[in-house]
Length: 397
Image 1 (spheres, one colour):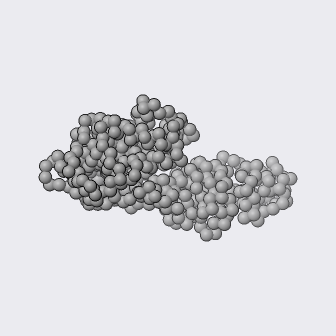
Image 2 (cartoon, rainbow, N blue to C red):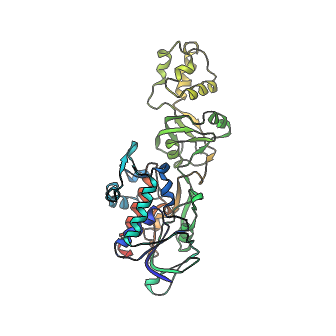
Image 3 (cartoon, helix red, strand yellow):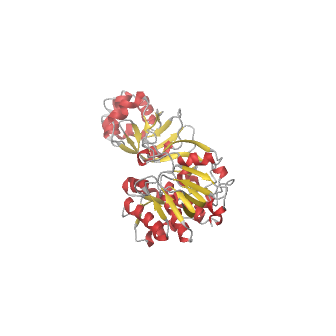
């Protein structure tokens, strides 16, 4: 049996950061993970580039039943704090559109930075170690939690659950964190895939399939949400993807309709006067991708020159392009989702320490909680900020 001050379940971004900070405080920290290598999800994040944070992190960019929960942790661990640590380790970063900050050396380098930081701080990391059981001992406070693995049992005064959510099942994602929460009497907000591609309804599947690979900037409104998202949209053979669609999926619920502005900021009503002699599909191709312009004209039954189309009908067609209707049949599920919406109910967790209010010594951090950020490095930043909050909490000492 091995005894530690703190056991951290999960060797992802939040678990490794927490381990490094705990070990740096002089605590005996053990990280357990069933995966072959630590930081598996970090290694493929950002398409292999690792979008580690965002220059404009704000509480309003996070979803959850308690929108105020993230404020304390975000205020106490800023993007600058993270970048100071990353740069001190010799890694370079670059800021791109919408404040997204990437690791210049790539996701693998960022993953190794996290692993090295934890180990050099003194934390022990055991990969390929499935968690068979977690229980609370009634014995000495120094052995408050017991974790059973196929090899040795481990005990600790504090247990940090950093097991993530259900997205990326091929990397071993599981509901372990939720099962642990329920075992200790903590409710779990219903989960669903987030930042996921959307499936076309049957009547639009051929339309999307024919445009697969076509991308354009759009604005998307979800019928049940007040926020409009902007960014690039990509047609796929199954439906829609791209940054704007992934963001919109956070707000979408089954049955909700999307209204897609295919030409945001463009006054299409001037087209009849600007290009009267052009074929309608060629005139529209000055504003939209050519394949999309042709497909929309075919779908709308429009052909011939702009001047030959009745003005009222043409203006109605052009106006509708600012509100293209799309009611998704669903998402592509956890297999393609970047994050998990829902999770451990934050009303039972301290927003300052990430400790369960009714279970001293039990902490939940990262994606295991009912906290989900928008696209652009916000979820990785939450992983670090929540881990920092837990690792520096007085109860963990």
